[in-house]
Image (tube, rainbow, N blue to C red; front, side, top):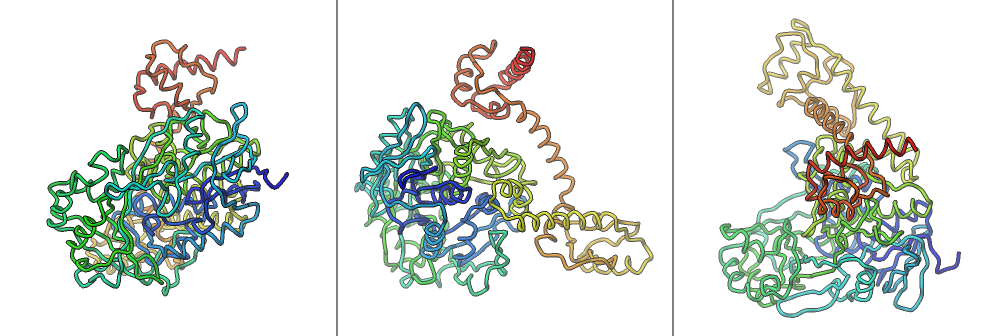
Length: 632
């Protein structure tokens, strides 16, 4: 294999590209990572934070499947918080504020020291295709890199254009060129091109912020790590608080008076923006009745005074940005380090993809990240990881790795994209997940460790450690179910005293410990030791024991739902099926099915516009087709 010959080439070194390149190389593929600069590997282009509602679950799954984002967050986090902590484990999500510079440095060190991985500083200009199959990538210096698998993870660089008022600058980020030739090449290969819009707020000098006018938000104590490999976060690491302020009516008046200068409302941008992370202009327009919007002042790092004002992403002209920001309490005299901007970039409809993230049109070409219409570091990293795994399996002539909606948030993310598509930047939420009671942050290792171990992305020692953890959980749940407290005994008197202290009714009949634990006001530590057999279990074990018992009925019902779901998911659709031959299905639905090429009846059922009647007809047709093929 010559120096320009690889097994996998990854274009782009953002959150999708780094995960893709790392996992491909870790699975034994000779991998090239093409990026404009080593200095921007793993760069946090927008908010210096990892996780959030629905996103924390993605990071935990990335961690178990051999990804790096969780470890980078743990090593460089400067504030950690558990979101929705009062609402139960099913929707609890981790988030951390990271040191932007240190996060990038961490990812650079990991990438540059990874075996099997070569970093090439250049711009990709063309995907080389021969007879419908990828054969490599051309780069700007004139070289052709050869590989049977290519992953495009170009972020916002595909024909990216940045807008500040009427000023338009081509580029994927401030000071970095846009990728125009590659975008045109992708279009020439037959892929439709859409344009989506995202944005970023100005960056502010913390030395000029009056924090006394703001609400302080400290880190959790103790901070909870993202990675299952991180035993704990050092106390001295989680140092910096965030602050909360709010916009005012004056802020809103300034924005209303300048809508005509906003690229989104002047007609300058004709791209779709992020509904769930809107610009401040969008907020004022769409929520006209609100008198104030929260602004989170988030520190950029330990060695800088720069702050990120989360909540006021904008593309307004610089002078209007200043007037707007000065009207916010605590920011009256703030100094701008740089101004916010809107950015539009090319997107390929994700319905062009298979569940493996390989394109349907070009064999061996995979897409990951914002090119698929998503927004967010975590969504990008999850896709990059899956694209990297599947590209490696493709090179080895092995079956694709597809996660189901009942297995992982990553499975929901990819299934949503390829079956439903998206007409706006897609963002992960717990509400998108049907089976979130059994797909939680805390049990990502239980759900996914066997896959990671199978692919060589988890050591035998870590795999056995995970297995032992769940044996311990099962054993403790069983002990609590089998331990009964009888009235009149010393144990009953003692436990009634504890229950009384927590306004819980006393025991009057023989009762198992698990039944007592189901009471909302009762926690594990209050009742677990009354048979004299309690052990000092780790907190992660205790949390899961408590959850499994308190929500046992709900979990049992959801597991039944999953069994019904799997029935339809297990009805496979042959790749060579001719939908035009299915009687009773409209031409429109036949065309939708032919375009999406669902792998099973479940995916077909989730395609927009495919009716329940059509699914019933398809199910009967598949049974008939299967019988005919067995008889041949």
